[in-house]
Image 1: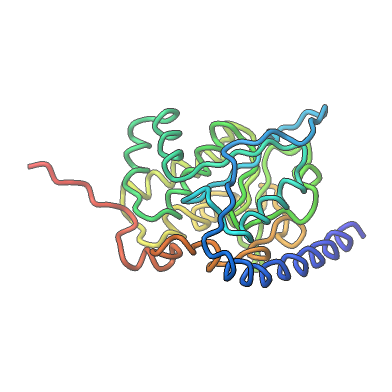
Image 2 (image 1 turned 180 degrees about the vertical axis):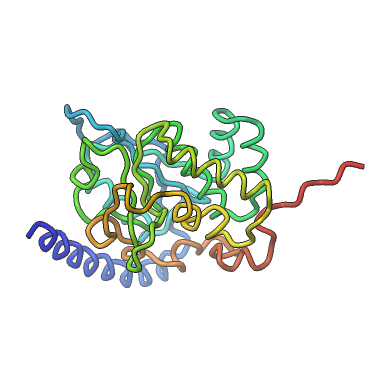
Length: 264
């Protein structure tokens, strides 16, 4: 009965989100250069006295903090669904600073060799959760139910499954120093150092999660009752200010991992 209610609410949100997405074409036709700023940090709308294994922090990243209307509405909706969560956001440059300050030179050097933004974001999300814990959401992802009820206080991690039953990485909830998150980070590092994958999905993305995580041992939740993507926004609105486009096209034009310079 509970899942039925969540699914009904999720469908209503999807309908309303798609209406705003269609209306945004008209908005940006009239105001082609209008952008909305996503804050680097925002306090919870109200505090919670209940302790939680997973810190009440939402993490997101993007190549810019200047968002189109649909992306900004997606951000606002997540704030609405998680009023007791702090919000933290990093652009490309801030991710590099964070990793340089908190991790080893080896990890920073490997991260710096990634030439596709999506691969950088994949590695960063694992490292930031390893360091601080919290809930990571892709910039086009949104919770479909109050986040505090999805990531219950007793959980120390939660992963999302797709329609096919695979684990994805567009939603990750974890406590700090989670051994499984650490293992995922080590695997990504090894992939970069060995240059044994050319596809972002397998090098740094969901492919790593599905290889490393014991599927039947980790807590998972179906995306339908947890977190959806692409309802408020789409590729056009996300990459309107990025000529290189989505990572799927970028990885066809450049090596995902930059070759090391040969020292003679």
